[in-house]
Length: 475
Image (cartoon, rainbow, N blue to C red; front, top):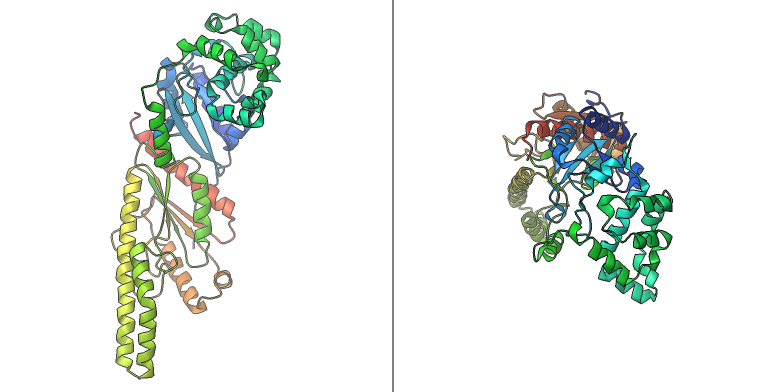
């Protein structure tokens, strides 16, 4: 039995992002973190996304460098897709980093994002060099005030009315504004407002927001909205309701712009397949659309057809078999047992084939497919009878094999027959040493922790998807 066939990624998100900015700088591409600077550490830890602004004329080169540096392009859901905004992810040390690459500032309302201020040149003129490159706090503050004014919705106003406090209308935005304000100087904001690109803004209202955001009333918010009318695009009629419907009715999770990836979690009973599968699903589904398929054969997780049939006939079958035994009709007993077993196997085979076909369709649409068990060998953990697993199935792109000691498996599965468990473990180990057609094969000993399993598997996902991204023409 081989040891762990992988090497856990030793870098952290900071290293990967720093290398990206270094490449852009080397190629003469100006770039900066243009908002949420205070949440930068959370971004490189993978707990939130971060936004990078580059000039529109350099966006194609910037995207090529992202791919070359190992970042994976993904397509956001329909209600999160906007012109000039591109999504990239990367897996580092068990975390998923998410970058929004902006060819122009795109912000504003939650679903329509109508704010397109012509401030890219201004931002890059006020670039704070170093790592990470950011804009000045004063410029961040000015745009944040504008964004807050646009984001105020009837829900915020209704909440303020319920609380009988005009200041409560800003309750969802006060913390972020205060964090930026602490890094600002009022005199520098006043000087910044004299820049040509910001001449249209009522500077006294921006300074008033610096002194006390809650002092901005509805009339003043309207004045700010009128001042930035030329910064906003007019959305097509029905855009916001359509995006709202898509958000409610659609499926969450970003998809890959190429063939999705399949991951098979395999091992004998008691090896931790379910725990590992769920841990992987939790991390991957934070950014990607993940479809999970159980390909086992027990009746704890049957499909609708098999569950309805087998559970429906179970009581009559047991009663009839018991009666035949009491009457010593041994031939009838054997015949009933064969009928019940054959019916279960035929339904199990059809169920597995349908799930595999559904998984293949999901992969074709750019989803990540997780298989808990996979019909590669017998016994696979379903039972010890001759299998009806279909032949000729394509091996998953990444095959994760979980080894377990016999004593541990018996301890984890006290209700199972120990001899059956030993036979399954032996069959698994014979299979695990055979050549595999998977692009990545990972074998984990029992001593490898769950965190290490997940981290190493995500490294394998990163390797496979990075290679596919480099081979796929950019859209």
